Image 1 (tube, rainbow over the protein chains, first blue to last red):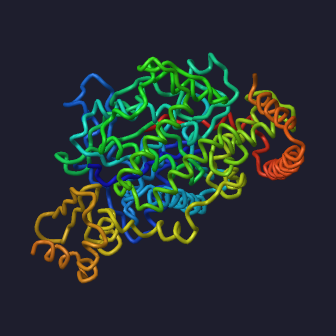
Image 2: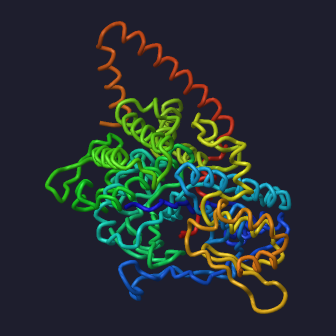
Image 3: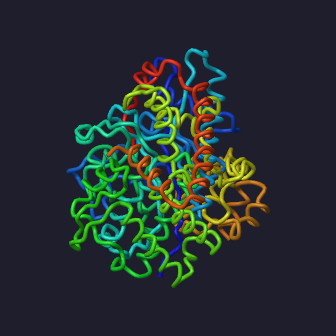
Length: 495
Length: 64
């Protein structure tokens, strides 16, 4: 049986400007600006971080495991999210959410948090040194940074089955959720000299399966860091997505992937389309193919285009929904919304692109790029077209092109304002966020699966949260309401 | 065939269909074009003036 698809998105934002054009310093300014407007600083607790643990078993000593930098700005927010400096980017990791729509809301709340941080930071900086932030994935010069999704998966699902079932989705979903890019920037893609690509990220993928995230990026990442009970759970860490400005694209990205993972848990991998014979070739070729009709040979001797894969996968999801109701992913109204948008976007990109320019990022961006190119008779890759590409992702309302192209909103402004401050109710993020809001002076650190208290006397006390579905509003609200202090909370937890 | 040629070809194929559809398509097409023109005007107002320099200066360190 499928388990609840607890999920979330972590986004590294592009950053420009700031003192000395030092992106690490500027990222710290952004994170500290936001953290210091709260009453206190609560640090991230690195216990339990094992980014070099490989899901295929054991520690992979031959690969370039990511390095955890512990000295950079790093904080936990009252909405249960983590805001920190990752390498040379400010990063927002959303709290754990129970449904794709909720995870979309907390991703949008992350944009709002970055926008507020930017405002506070720039108020204290010389205007000539103002910082700008971009929700995108590359600088157009061969440097890429990630938007990673996380999904809770049953531990007993064989890793080989995850690869078998999910590679077709990860190479092809860009036709509906790609963020679009003018030109190319890696050697392999530059050979083809595309005017436009569906995806920001596709050309950076070099392996099918692996542990790395910064070098030789794999389509399936094997980082085995469950941040929960490792006997029962796996956290599938998906590094192949683009940062979406379209809320509907984020929703369909999360919803389609969660439904397919649940279908895999429920029925196994047999009903999924066969793997492309060369997945790395497929993901790159699909990104460059704006006709969406270029087919690649697959393991079952058929050929499929990215669109064909998505069409088959939509039917796999449809079958799963029909047979089970898909409660592991969301309630029926929300599941219906995922399936409807996914279908409409899929049909629209093929037959009537204008009809989905309000939902598909690459279509919205391409429409402007083509229109501008035509109006001013510009060549492919003209700097103005590249500027449009970049500025599409600018977070500042005064500059954002995404805010001007008519993208549909899924999340109301009121809900986003709430989600900036308050955690989701139905995962352990509720307990984390509430503790940070209620007992900031007594919490010394927190991470995904625990909160650490310092009550002033005696040793530090760690409250473990190994099950992402406990620590919810239903289970802990009364306890939190009746505990005026952290001492009372811990006493009550001991009883 | 370039993307734009393909779309134009599709459009010209469509216009050879029944005449009532032609006029609906034409009206819809005019509206879409007008909308796009308005959008491009708006983008002209906010797009970085020195695009060359703006794009050149945007350099990131890799992440993840």
